[in-house]
Image (cartoon, rainbow, N blue to C red):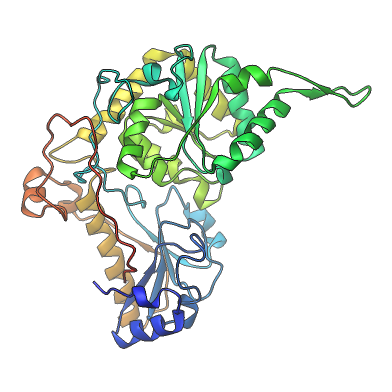
Length: 409
C-alpha cells in the first residue's frame, strides 16, 4: 500500500513517484469518471510499462496510452473488438468485481420479507408495505425501481417506463432523487411525455401525466452504502435498467438483494451490456434480457408485473445464487474472481517480458479454480476486517464502516 494523497492534484510528481518505485502495472479505476477528484494526465505520462483501465468508466479510452481493458465476452463481444483502442482482457463469468457475499457490512437477502417497521429502518418490511416511503399511498401490485443517477436516464427509456406503468394496473415506480434539483424537471417531462400535441392548432393535450406522477416516487440519497443496498430488497420488486448506460454498482446491489433486473441487450456499447452479462451468468438470459430492444424490454417488465408467480420464482432463484455455499456461485465468488483477475495481470505481464506487443487475452480457468470457493478457503483466508461471514440469520441493519479518502496504487 502506498499513500499518495499528497499527490492528488499533482499528476507529474505522482508519475515520478510511480516510476521511482518501479510499478509494473498501473490500473485506473475511474477513467473519465470523477473528473476533478483525481490527478488528471497521469496515464499520458506513461509512468508504468503496462497501463490498464478497469470498471468505473466502462468504455474505450480512445487513448494510445492505455494498453488493456478488463471485460468479458458478453459485455464486449469479440466481433466488436474494433470499437476499442485497447486490447481486451477477457475474464470468465463476469468482469465486474463485487464483494457482497463476503462483506460483513452487507446483509444477506432472505426469501421471507421481515416485519414492517414504523418508522422505517433498513431490513424491515416489503416493497408492498414500505411503498417507497409514501405511507398514504395505496398498496402497489408491483414496485419497479431505478436507483441510477438522473444523467443515466434518457427520453426513450423514461417513455418505456410510462408504457410499463400504464400496462400494469396498480404498479409503482421508485427512483433515486439524484440530484434532488432534477426531480421537478423529471416530473415535468413525464407530464409532457404522457400528453400529445393537437395537430390542428399545435396546442398541448393533457394525458394521464398527473396520474402517472402520483405513482412515481423519489427516494432521498442514503449516505451509508450498505443501508442503501438493503433498500433494494425492502423497496423494490423489479429493477428497470437504464440504457445505454446500465446500472453497474447499483445493479450488483439490486441483484444481491434478490431484485431481478430487466435490461436491454441490443446495444454495442460496453456500458450497455454489463447487466446482460450478469443475467447470463446468473441464469436469467431468456427471462430478463431484451435482445430485441425497446418493445421487448417493456414487454418483459409488463409480463413480470402481471405474473407474480413467475416473478417470485425468479426472485427465489436469484436469492439462492447469493446464498449458495460450498461452492459459492460463480457470480458472487470473490476469491475465484481475484484468482482470474490476477491471472489476467500475469498473462499481460508475461507478454511484456517476452517483448510482445499488447494483444487480446482470454483468462482460462484451471480445473481447480472452476471448482469454486468452499467455506474452508474463506476461513483460512478471511476478508480484510474480520472472520469469514457464516451463512446465519442476517441482522436487520447493516453496520457502517469507516472510509478513507487516500489515493491508492
